[in-house]
Every structure is written in C-alpha cells, then in structure tokens.
Amino acid sequence: MGAGFTFRSFCLIAMAGFGNLTGIVWCSLILGLSENLILSFDEYAGWADIVSFAIMVAVIMINSYRRQIK
Image (cartoon, rainbow, N blue to C red):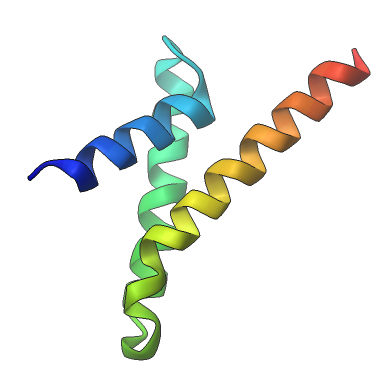
C-alpha cells in the first residue's frame, strides 16, 4: 500500500545521505520536479518511477566516483 512512498523515501536517503537534511530537501526538489516533468507527458507517464530510479543510480555513482578521487 505504501510501496511508492517507501521507494521515494529510500531514493532520497540514498541520494542525500542519512542525516543530511539540506541534501534531502534539494534531492526531494530534484526528484519531484523530474517526476512531474515526466508525468506531464501522457505517453511517458509510466516512466516516472524508472526516471527516479535512474536519477538515484546516477547520483550514487557520481558520489562514489567523487569519494575515490579524494
């Protein structure tokens, strides 16, 4: 019943980091805007979850790459 909210909450925590409130706010804005942009096109409305998952994977990959450089 709450799988969609749980998925989005996991995405936010995975993207921003646990305990990073400003990061969670910025990531929630990015995630919400991207999902609503996809939902505004009727043909691609089913792709909203896939886009949020792709953004989460991209952010995690960028963060891990930045940590390897340090």
